[in-house]
Image (tube, rainbow, N blue to C red):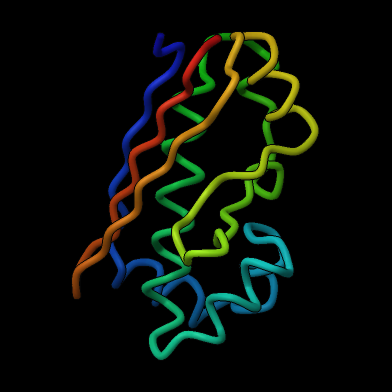
Length: 127
C-alpha cells in the first residue's frame, strides 16, 4: 500500500547559478558530505546536485502532512547509491521519524535528468 507519493522537477540552470554564486554555503547546507562527494566524482556535478535536490523535494512531498514533516531538514534526506549504482534514500532524524509515523516500510526513489532538468519520484510504501 502506498502511504506517500512525491514528484519534483528542478531546472539545472537554476542549480548551476545557485551553486555558482554560493558554492560552499549551498553545498554544505543542502547536501551531506557523501552526496557532495558523489556529485563531484561525476563528469557533470551540477546535474547530479539537481537530481538530488529533486529527490529531496519529492521526499518532502511524500512525507507531508504535519508539523514534523514541515520541519525536516535538507540533510535529513540523503540520496545514496546502491551497490548496483541505483539510487536509494536514507532518512535521518525527523525524516525517519515521519516515515515511521506514516507507516512507511520502504521508500522508493527514481531519478532522471536531461540537459535542462532533473526529475525525481518518491514512493513511500507501507506495511
